[in-house]
Length: 121
Image (cartoon, rainbow, N blue to C red; front, side, top):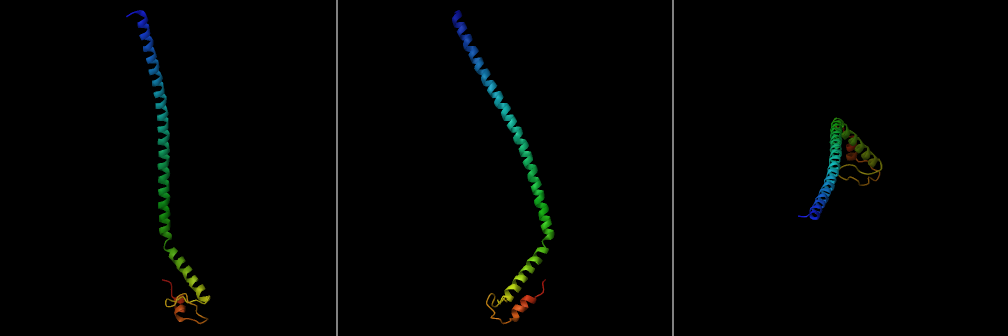
């Protein structure tokens, strides 16, 4: 092996080492970028879990409040229904089961009056 061949092989080896070093630097930069992204995603995931737990707690507390208020709602709805029936009756329509919605032609109907006067349970 002569000197020129030896120097040529040394130059090739040096070029390979330089390319290897460049590849290593790229991998190092990519690893740092991925680690930073991973940390950011973990923080975001933790925040999301916290928000989800808060939302679950809010939903549960709302359900408890609705359960406590629930018995009062049917009374209000029933009162609204009775008011609607009274309005229909005064506008001249039957509200009794037999002929509901038919015009009364100005006559009173004892069945309709019975519906209006039924006691709330």
